[in-house]
Amino acid sequence: MNWVESGRWNEILVCMETIVITLCTWFFLSHTEHDREGKTKYRRIAAVLYCAGLAGLTVGLADGRSVKLVYMVFMTMAAGRRLYSRDSMYRFYYFLFPVTIVTAQIFVDYMILAYMSSRWGIMVFDYASENTGLLIRQLTEILLTGVWVVLLNRKKYEHVRGIRFAGLFLPPAVSVFIIFSLLYIGDVFVQLYGAYLIILNILFLVLMNLYIWYLFSYQSQNKKLRAELEIRKKQSEMQYRYYEKVEQRYRSSRKMVHDMRNHLQAIEALKEQDAAQGKEYVRSMHQMLDALGIVNYTENRMLNIILNDKAEEAKKSGIEMEIRIGEIRLEHIRDMDMTTIFANLLDNALEAAEQAEGTRTIQVQADAFHEFTAVKIRNSMPCGSTAGTSALPPERQAGKNHMGIGLDNVRHTLEAYGGGMMTEILEGEFVVSLTIPA
Figure 1 (cartoon, rainbow, N blue to C red):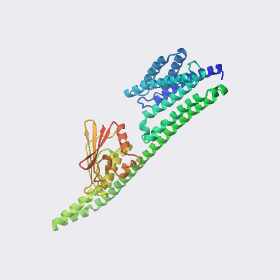
Figure 2: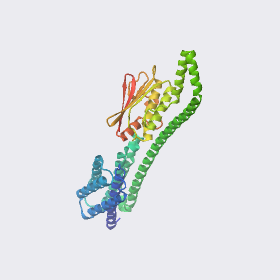
Figure 3: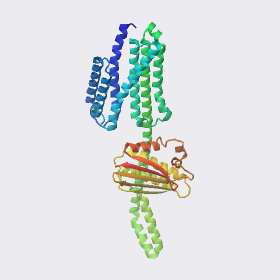
């Protein structure tokens, strides 16, 4: 590749970097939480203005990196605040994102200069090194944007943890190493055959990393959807059992009303002949009437279904379940989130109480305090448990999630509403305390 061709490539890559920075900035902004809707048209206009202004500064200023940084910070913060989110924390992110982009550019430039200095002993302008540096910078900008998006949307990837999440950043690191290796061993190759093949390799590395990001996001979203499907399935089963019981009790009540005249006559006859037997008959009648009723613990339909369903399960398992619900306000919580929180916690309590010895109890208390709803769930636990998680069944202690969700998901769901969860052991009982803003 001669000097003229290298110069043309340099112009193309400089223009391409302006477009890459613009796309990366708007990709970053579009993947933050939004509280400004219906701004699509203005967002496109802002992106075009951003690109045009950045291109003008790039062409007009030979060495205006500090000016471009100020421009990028100002435009990113202005566009982010007016078109995406007014949250104060995101204003800080809007400031920090362009700073990290420019910092990465400076780091790559110094690495190229250090390489040239160590390789040749002098620092002279060379289009080949300049163009390679531009390619590496653009790769770094794309990968850095991906890192920003993943970290800001960590909740979306809550099912991917530990080594698997850290492994996501391995391909970018390997790609950077490969590029620097190509730089180090490619001098003779470039002189003989040109830089086209090296440039093609770098472009393929960029595409490979983007594809890996896409697969990671797709799989994480797929896993999250499967977990939500399990929640909805459980929710549907509880609702079906609930309304089936309502129908059964309705038929039983109709039959009882039909027989009520006979019952009243029997009570009157027993009252005159045998008072004790009459009282026993009345007591049996009360039990029959109690069995027909479904308790309305709260005005929240979904929570009432969950509580009735779990109370029925506790009764079948021989667990004494006490439920005291005050004037709580949970109408802002979605039915699916209500199931995630309360069905999961009560399942934990039921399974732990089943393993307890002696009196097995579960207590559910909830009431409103100022602008918060406070919920406390206490349950008996197996003897010898000394830690919070030890009150849970063995499969929970091993880290397996119940129906695809676990206590971490309960905590994350509460955090989405500004609430919190605390677990503790008090006098041999496992206690979960929840606080939920009204």
